[in-house]
Length: 248
Length: 320
Image (cartoon, rainbow over all chains, first blue to last red; front, side, top):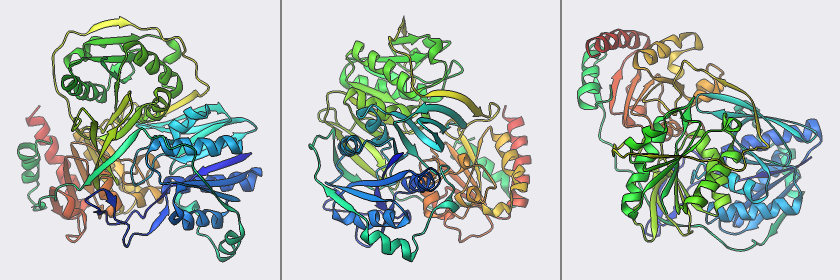
């Protein structure tokens, strides 16, 4: 089984969000970048397929050279090959079409992406990709088993879960649940040393079509201060929620 | 030319998200000088959409489409969009609509903006404002394609009544098969989901253990609320992952969010910040959640919550 894991390179979840260049660019100053958490759950699940079912695991990112440490980290975790499509990820369609090229050329059976990246939260790259390569697709996937060419997937739905049966080739929009938080792997020294020798190929993008143009950023207005209610005067809280906030 | 929406149902009954999407689409239609057409699948009372400005309903009744399957529903929406010559499609942010949205964007070669929070800023060029960085910022996005898809954030636009007499037209899609098949659904039928709830009651490590969750559940019962939890609580296995709200869990955009024993890590606050009113109950007055909340109670959950439950019961009895 050939697996491709799509990796977004995103600001750490604790990053301060600021913008520069007249609010058109994210301010990367002082920000550390990580593997998108939703993708990392997928990568770890892919490692299990590698170890238990003999799968090969490639990782891919669409980005400039600054994303290479993130790809090296994926190699240190255990991926076999990394591919970087040398382009700025301008919009969902552009990224999906670059991933589709890599997917077609590599004849992958299973493509694991995340439910969404935690920076732009678009959540549509994986669906567009599935459509472009005409693969089956399961989003918000929290459990996946592959047996031959058939797949059983668990999808998180609003208020519960459902079990789906489908077949390869398959695209997954993964998230926590594919593996647990405690299953995530911190690269060890041996992994980091080996990652330096593993192939990281850089390929040029195919086409430059986009469907959207990014405009200015802004930040929410600062919030007013909290109204404190004495723990012995909860009637006041109910009154405030009813009359002032009109929330109950 | 009309604006197309997918009006979601649950057991044949429209979800609130369907009415919200209809309300939003009517706003866009007015700006464009056109009308709203809805696609419904196995809805029992399609005409209800008229209340929110839908002029025409393409009413699909098909046993193959009884459970949601993304590709077959994408086919239905594609056929409807083609028939109606729709240039704008509006979807909700439910799990099903998000599943559908990428496939539909690929199929219709449409530019798509997710997490849109208000009516388009401009029609030509077609520019919308969406949230980014898990509600820590907004970004303007211009859709440059002929067909455009807008996924509206839940509870951002709200319901706007616009009494219209909806024309109901039976619609028979030609292709209703899907290579992804639903084997079983595991869903609590007696509980409201986080996505559909008006009120969410959420617990953190301050509750000290899963055996104390009756406090959260009892408070949620009184308020007709969904229950949720912080990341550590789900990581420790006290509560299922599906209840984890925050940046890597579920986003919450509800009318009222009550956080109990949750300190308010930045990732948690980002995930719940789209909620309209936030209440925090915590023993630690220095907890970061007090900076993000509208109302706060400094106190022990084990003392405050039982009292609050009793007082709310009395309030509900007096106001119902």
